[in-house]
Amino acid sequence: MAGSQELWFDPVSVFDSDCEEEFESVQEDTLSLNGLEGVASSNISSLRDANYGEHSSLVDQMQKPGGLSTGNSARNSASEAARISNSQILCSKDVNPQLKYDGASNEVKQPVFLDDIASSAGEGPGKEVGLLDNCGILPSNCLPCLASTVSSVEKRRSLSSSPPSARKKNALKLPFKWKEGHPNAALFSSKRLLQRPKAGSQVPFCPTEKRMFDCWSHIEPGTFKVRSENYFRDKKKDFAHNHAAYYPFGVDVFLSPRKIDHIARFVELPVVGHSGKLPSILVVNVQIPLYPPALFHSEIDGEGMNFVLYFKLSDSYLKELPPHFQENIRRIIDDGVEKVKGFPVDTNVPFRERLKILGRVANVEDLHMSAAERKLMQAYNEKPVLSRPQHEFYSGENYFEIDIDMHRFSYISRKGFDAFLDRLKFCILDVGLTIQGNKPEELPEQILCCVRLSGIDYMNYHQLSLNQEPSDTSAET
Image (cartoon, rainbow, N blue to C red; front, side):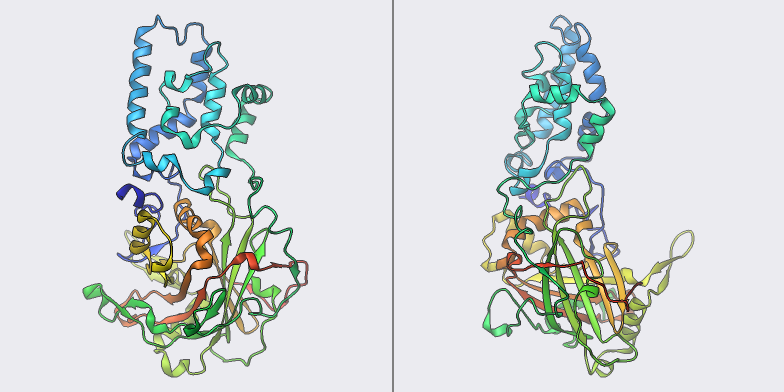
């Protein structure tokens, strides 16, 4: 069970944070082989070196006369020892069950480096069968999920027609294409383009008590747990005050072949009066990828969807919210900085790095999950996430937009979300934002905005046309 939990979440490199309980979506370069986070880092490093550094040396050795001859007993002994060692590492009880099957996303992954090694080294006579077993690198019987689907003859023909530098470049950069028959392959071609729709016109509203799906509802701010007034003494959290700075008035879902930044330029926002100190409208644009996460190349743009949440400033925010929270909202909008004590010198940090996402699945018991998935859900559901650094901010005439870019989330974070993507239409999601309190006088934390999304099925929605004149009253901040 512990090995399954480590499949998606790396508590060291993925969910590192300044505090004990908050996480952040920091992008990282941790090497992973379809969920082999349970293997020791030294073993992983040795596998990576085998993929990258030993490719050329293996080819040279196998092309030399007698390079793998049966008469060279010392070399055969070393190869056999290496093969046994790698087999023990990769076939351990913790990781072997997961290697047998890793979900639907494996259908589009390409075994780049192992294929290159196998096909390049297989050029010698009589070395086509059992080659990886002889050289002691990544035995194929322990990695069924990395098995090649291309014959060795075709691989040798394609590799021999291109120089080594081109081969390496092609291996590192594989273009993403949907597999034939994938439900998303024809999704975008069948969806019509919307020209400047009214904000909030796509997803219908439904009262919370009706329990309908594919709609949005109001959710009480007091249902979220935040840092309490004595958090720095007892590390306890409590339910927030039942007031928010902004309340929802609409939700949209748009499909798009590429990410859409500053989406407020392409929708028709309602005309509301100026509030003076704070913008009257808050737009939260959550950019969600629909292509599977890739381990060996960092795709951060492609086919996806935008969950756009619209909020209106509370009429009574001046009375209901403490002055320090109002000031912190203003510092977020103005892109203020704060001095953080450090060694050897203090540093200035953008205040926007305090923005924190509150999220939970409200109907966990209604979802069909495996034991490992349920354990992960119980461990990480309702855990706040610092949105840094995958966020951008834009301001316009009487509105402020926050873009949260999930395309840039770490591989492990995206892998976990991708596993639940098909079940998104069965989930009741409560989403909120707050500003992290780092000082006693900033506690308890307050809710910036919140909304409930009930069973959103993105297959029911359309594309947003970008072939239109964007609003001239907007600017990036």
